[in-house]
Amino acid sequence: MIRVLQSVSNMARAGIETMLMNYYRHIDRDLIQFDFLANKPIPGEYDEEIRSMGGRVFVSPGLNPIHFREYERFVAQIVAQTPELKIVHGHNEAMAYYALQSAKKAGIGIRIAHAHNTQIIRDYKYPLKMVCKKLLPSAATDFWACGTDAGRYFFGQKIWDGQGHILHNAIDLDRFRFNCDIRAAVRRENGLDDCFLIGHVGRFNVQKNHLRLIDIFSKTAAVEPSARLALIGVGELEQDVRRKAAGLGIADKVLFLGQMERVDSWYQAMDCFVLPSLFEGLPVVGIEAQAAGLPCVFSDQVTEEAVLTPQTQRLSLQDSDEKWASGILSLRGERDRSAGESAVRSAGYDIVQEAGKLQEHYLKMVESCV
Image 1: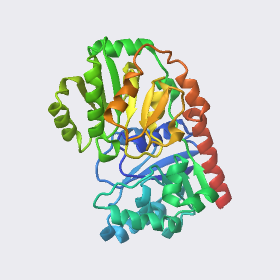
Image 2: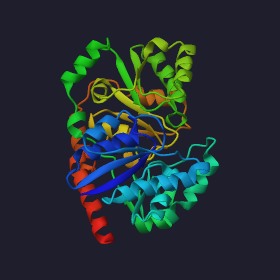
Image 3: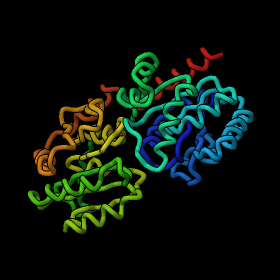
Image 4: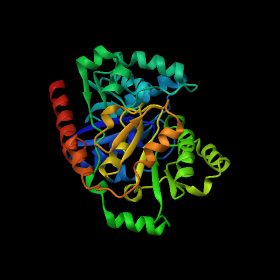
């Protein structure tokens, strides 16, 4: 058995982490076992499940330049105590440099930098992240991404064209295929039988553009009184979004559903899915929504690679709120949602198939590195 150390923020129920758990549940854990390097000292919702499957969660000293030497020693200790550890796989975008450089110094021969986004948020760490982004090629041996745009942004055209590898954000299609009975039950239990339900799943942060979504929904609800907006997720901007909804007089039409373990049932209840993100790599939630047969409206900053069904459209963020509302309103009415699952499978997002490919890829990498 070989062990792969996955470097993450923490194993919270978020996009990257959910993607990793999808793969972890479906690989042969007698051949490959995952461990997780958590770079935030916050327990994650997936920690208990990881340990139940034989994985370990290591909490690092944190991604702070002041602690970099301590961080190197921490990773070296993990490597020294784990002879089966053969691969370090970094999912921290530019900040994966910490884990990959430390693994390089500790003698790990396979170090994967994995890009999941097409931009870096301009927060207080932005200058440090840009330095780390430039240093990534010196620390990594392999360059992976969820899609072409993310790979080119983080690694540059030359590296991506020569060495880039796409790992699909695959999902468990059995969970997300359309089910009319689940749809009816969720809508009935939540008083939504006669509503036009618009859905969104994502952390309340700048990237996901919730404040713009509230503006768009306000225009939609002005035309369609039965419209409701279901927001699934948590985050630092949630209170700002609540205040905006209240200020626009639509608070009673917006459902703040929080974070949930099984979001799949809510995809069944929705009538359309809207993702007005400022940037994305290749969003897992967009794949899930399309697998459930939902018509989707994405911003033009969501990569075109995420469009897997004819029912999905992209609109420019430069378009007016009224134009977005018109696009959403055009999706009203009953429709056949049964084709979503097969379209997503054909595009290469079936976790059963993709986990087998990842497993084989890892094993070949280790074999060639010996």
